[in-house]
Amino acid sequence: MRAVTVSPGVPESLRLVEDWPEPAPEEGAILVEALAVGICGTDQEIIAGHYGEAPPGQERLVIGHESLGRVLEDPTGALQPGDLVAGVVRHPDPVPCPNCAVGQWDMCRNGRYTEHGIKGLSGFARDRWRVQQKFAVRLDPVLAPVGMLLEPASVVAKAWDHIERIGTRAEWNPQTVLVTGAGPIGLLAALLATQRGLTVHVLDRNTTGPKPDLVRALGATYHSVPVHELDMEPDVVVECTGAPVVVLDAMCKVGPTGIVCLTGVSSGGRTIDFDAGALNRALVLENNVVFGSVNANRRHWDQAAHALAQADQAWLNSLITRRVPMSHFAMAYEHTGEDIKVVLDFTS
Ligand SMILES: [Zn+2]
Image 1 (cartoon, rainbow, N blue to C red):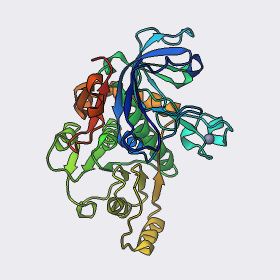
Image 2: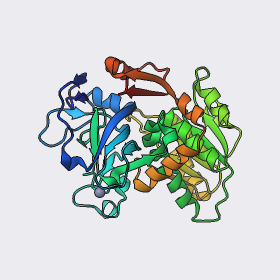
Image 3: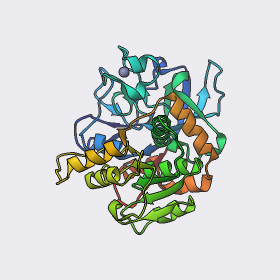
Image 4: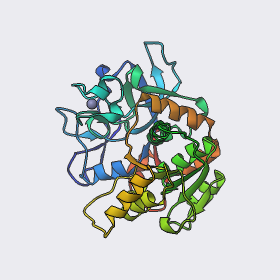
């Protein structure tokens, strides 16, 4: 069968292998036919050789962590043939650490977790894959065209879960949220914010392209000015750019008792002049919280599946700006700068 692979650590080693072996029974009882994978910056970094680890004893890594498939067989009976399914990306570490021991592998303490298509586990960019029941998330049939958005939605569901857990340390009645960055994570964070009845503002540097209209279609307000020029004090900021100046501005912008959730990964190595004492003073005197959030556990995947099923399906569909057939697979990994989400389609 076909599999999209790289040689980890070797730049530009992306290759379609036509005779990749069928998934091993040890991968899980549920056999799934791939429909599509979504592509994100992590895939680009793996292809560039910055990241990625093949399973033990293998030279190549099958990439793809934003999965969508259809169940072919499930001898456990939990899922039915034809069910739409996505695979949870991260598996707990083998020790396991205290968090992995209770299913909170998104909070792994020792870093020895594995991840499909990224770190030590084959990815989902292959014609068929297997999954264990506890890592198989069933999707509403209405999500067939867009279900590969479940993985980024799970990341956002976790961010909101933790924002709300932190928020309930005191009386919690948020009104306004600012999302910085209108990529897939930012737009899905804004979607989940509107589902919570919040007044939503989204900031991005783009003034053209589909982002402003996608934000307005949510009933949210789009801004393309620097964060510090905004005339508001948000109760929550979900930071999705990783851009150092935006991150620091977001920390300064949040209102009293505010929460800043950082989801963007910065590249580092760039220093900027900044008054750290003034930031500390503001955080202390306003009881603000700044925290980082990455990945998702099973609870968040289920929350994300519910959120996507409740969303406007046409809006979700418009997040996918390119669908690339397998016959042109390499084009799916080309960076255009215009795209929101690119999907590799296994059915055409
Ligand atoms: Zn762990």
